[in-house]
Image (cartoon, each protein chain N blue to C red):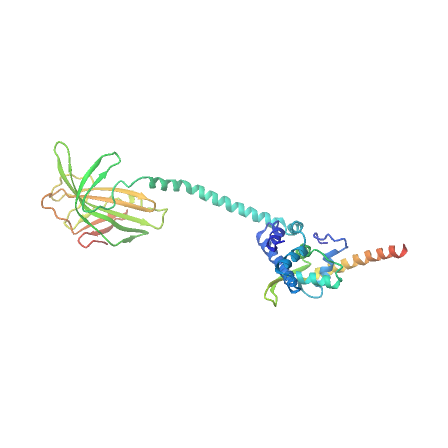
Length: 280
Length: 110
């Protein structure tokens, strides 16, 4: 009989695993001593193995004997602990399933806005099926990153958009778009949209403009320009699209050198420097 | 008496094992070799059956075991008889003497 098979069979009824391993090792030592003795007498390795296992006796009967000696109580406790572990794993996994489904649901959606675009033009499609042709006269690559808390902020894209609002009295629209990306290794705590959105603090730029919600679409000199934000989250990453309306001077408009964007509830300010192409 | 003990001898294998261990500590394979050598091959047990006997003796604290590396480099489990083990051995010897006398008495009178 194969020595490994003999050992497995003889010890298989010992339920407490550490015991089983120790007994197996002891029996294995014995078998090996016996095999070496056989080989010393001129047996081939195969013959020595056969002779050694035969001398040890019936492993099935021995398994019963060993199981009787090695108290089943440790074995039962051991089994019990294994069951407890299995149940704990099951509970953990099943409670994680709803979270996982949430994640997968996000995976199903396409982002509602592009994270970056090239100079030229692109077509933006909305969930409603409405599509808008947008001209992009200028786009920038912004490098660098800023760490706030356990979130890392980078700029996915920055560009200028122009299109015409159609209707009875069509008028041109121009806005500066900056898409920020916040990611975290703490996948269970992605930055949520309401944390990301700028609420109490107003963005501003190098040209002295400020931007706010619910402002006049044709503001006066000292009034804030209009601002619009959208967020999208996938996994541990959240994107924020900031639209900064530039409709005050359609003819004499020039791109600001930088824009300060407050993020998070604390109003930490990220400076997106368009002239240097870096976030800080 | 050890629960693993199924020998026809009163005291059986356990008694013989204790008697051998009385002299020095040994590991399983050594015990088997000694048994064979000293009994002139009369006691030829299946070698595996030694271990349930040893383990139940250990459980009853009649022997203690320790792992030690043998000169060959292999790790071995050495058994040593305890004070309680020596007492048990005396009791088993006693049983054996009673048994042997009874058998002898019947055989010589027959």
